[in-house]
Length: 450
Image (spheres, rainbow, N blue to C red):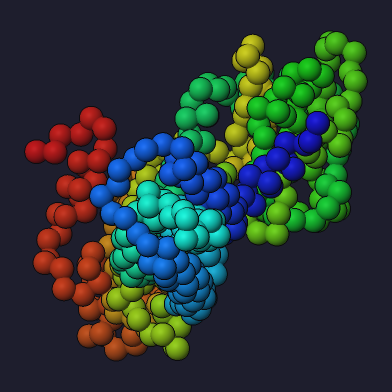
């Protein structure tokens, strides 16, 4: 039985592969051609169009050549996308682009039409012309051209930095919501019965056997293993961390008065954590924020010098921060078995860590941009309006750091006053001091918007 981590990596490879679905298209094309050839030979179907053998050969030959050309065209677009992503976006975004379903459907359609037409061509002779098959080939070409236009339209619009930021932010929110739902279903207090395991003997430690980035953790598998052995597993790292062979994977704690302890198989436990060469968003919403920030700071580089893009990127950073601002964030997340006993503790990211990831680098590189300073202040003011009291201190600290950075970037009083204004558009929004206050009240549950 293959380990969970191995199966996870295989699924990730198939999701990111650009050949698996086109290969299926090739196979389907051949099978469809054989089916239509059988129908043409054995079923009396009066088609609206009849072809001579010469015409059929010419049509199919042209289709085969066109499909090869279109496949090459799509590959060329892919190379251009890679160049643009590494130059103006973030190389981390490429992992999402590989998984785009439309691109794979387009490649599969082109490849399937190619093999379908080739399979028909080899059966055309002076005594037999597959009229139905050739008509279907023409329809397949029309569908291929429509998909090509949709594909071009999609990537013409979707590869703008702001569109990429919107897509990545939505992916990050989905992952964050999934983990929050799991936490709600657990309904466990990490300071409760987990303390039963703290006063025991020295915990048993399992180390990683290879280096890599933690891409995913099979939480339910760890919970089941801990319940079976009546122990508590405390993980040393969470999804997104890069670990080496010397890093602690898990500490196994037993409790006094428990049943005789048999240590879980370390190999089985390691098989419940998937390692890879880079982070993924699957269980790591902070990585989505990392990608968005990368796009924003790249726009602030002297080679690009596009602060307006950074201002637009901050719109989606603010959206993400507003989503997690009132959420249940802990430095450790407990996961319990069916009896409600905590079995696994996984490190989590705090509000301060999310906030610093979101604004620190953009503040540092945008010190001399009036747009960025004003938009960043607007973002922090908006968070103040919706944040619970215990999280406002961190936001106030970021506002103080922004004040200090702005003072260094704009030494004269007049420019400093402009840069320290709060503007949701960077420069140009109508002045309305009540905007953030009322928007924040609208988002807080139980508040009167009037």
